[in-house]
Length: 499
Image (cartoon, rainbow, N blue to C red; front, side, top):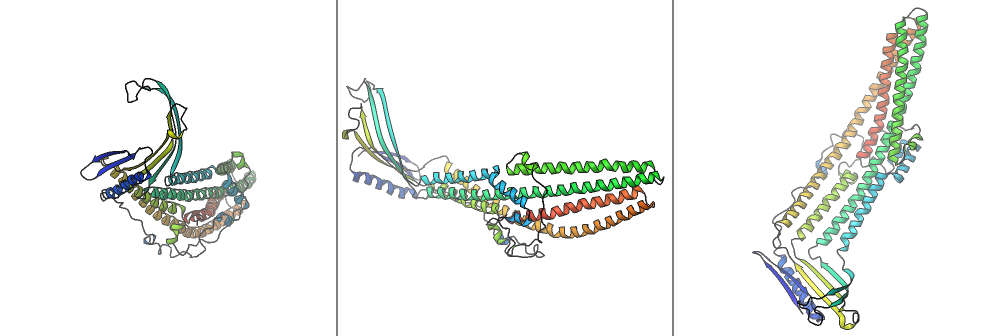
């Protein structure tokens, strides 16, 4: 049994590397060498020190995010969490069809799914380190041996074939949990990627629903512009009659005529918005622009008044994909720290081989050409210029960053929920006042038209009251759209149906 011992010394610890390259020795001697390696490993493990390097960040308790007073005026309901098919609450079959199509064909979802498969493949790579590795090796080379080397005559100075075929075995003993921690980290990343995939799904579905809502808004603005055009055409006819009766001047007639192309321009702008939103929806579906041309006028139903779950903020951390994924990343970085710490400890490996080796081919596969070997090995870093400590410090900092990102995400998620609820609350009052303003403006317009027909009023009064009605009608359309948009945003803020 031939033991090659390589020793390096420092003021603290000693690194020893053994390799057993003997051929055909007794198995007892092999296991004796392995026992020596393991004993030295236990002794040298005490030399490893991380020097007090530890993460500094701490996870925020969600119960610290006080929101009871901010939410005191909200309706509380245990069923307020959105369902996974939350968009169906708007009662539009065309929207249901668009979302089904997007879930099947959207490139963004396929990218997210590919990232999940990639992360799962990395899990397989990490798990492979826990298993023995076996591979075959076959080498055959023709070479000339030196006349002045250790090769004796008659081989010295001659040409010959050198053949070797071996079956090789290797295994790393994971005494310090390094490889298991790496597997846990890979599993954590895979789980986080799955949650990210759901988050991408929520983002896509919210974008489709909001774009569909804006398409409905654009159609409503187009219909309003077409109604205004008819009103102005009617006013133009009245003005023409008044000019013919010498009640109004040609100046009034020109103003009434000017209102017609302005109304047609508003129609053109609304149609442009419709076409652009159709094109946007087609892109979100992963289809070409022609797909957008087939999307008809939306028919979205109003929804019930918003409510909040009774267990905010505690359960929010289990409902928002971004919060969950970030929490998983915190765990991943904690496993990376364990891997970095394990690198301070000895690494114990066992390699072995069995096969044949010979000069020439005549006796290549004979029993006398058989070779075997076992090589237990131990290595421990002695001086690395601070590489391991710096590596551990990097992972500590990454953990701290992940923790603070989680804390920030938690804070932002609560702010997001409360923002939507506050806006919904004040929007209700805004809509109430807007309805009253529109009613008053419409009454003023009706009176001005009656006076104009009877010859008592003038065109400027009609134009002023009509502009007020138009402004209030535009605002009403925008407020109705905002009510649905806030409802969609609240669904997103509450996790988009993730469980």
